[in-house]
Image 1 (tube, rainbow, N blue to C red):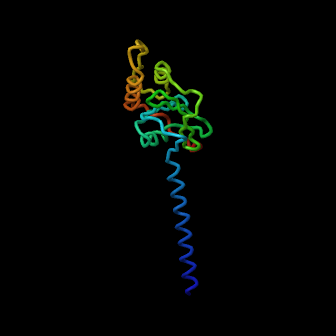
Image 2 (image 1 turned 90 degrees about the vertical axis):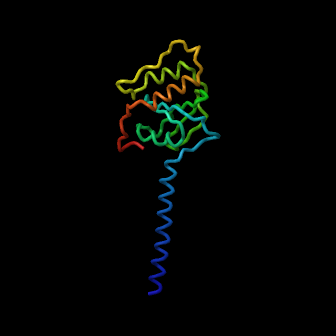
Image 3 (image 1 turned 45 degrees about the horizontal axis):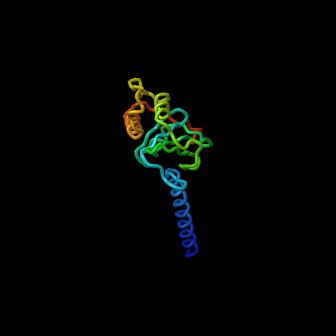
Length: 161
């Protein structure tokens, strides 16, 4: 009888270890990893034409499930200092190692105006008189427009990550 009780206790300890491992594995899925350093939030991410904005890491993680992502691809991410970053969904990694290091005002506006997730009432951002506007102001305006926009990208299919 004592042997069975010991076996049951050992089994439950092993079960607790497995449960905690599964919990940690799920918890790690929703964490964002950074290579070298973090970007300066807010950020804008272009995922196959669907542009999302986030003011923090937490809001970025909330917005990611709304967009279909190919886990093998690398996506452009732009921070508030106009620095280019790479986002790799397979590893949930954000890295400053990318081919496109500096973004211009015109490129930022072009990404915003050509995005696929446009609501019917959303306006285009004007490309006129860019020299009189600072990058930080344009970036802040576009982030606000993206956060206000009610258009939702299509939900992920079950085959995606």
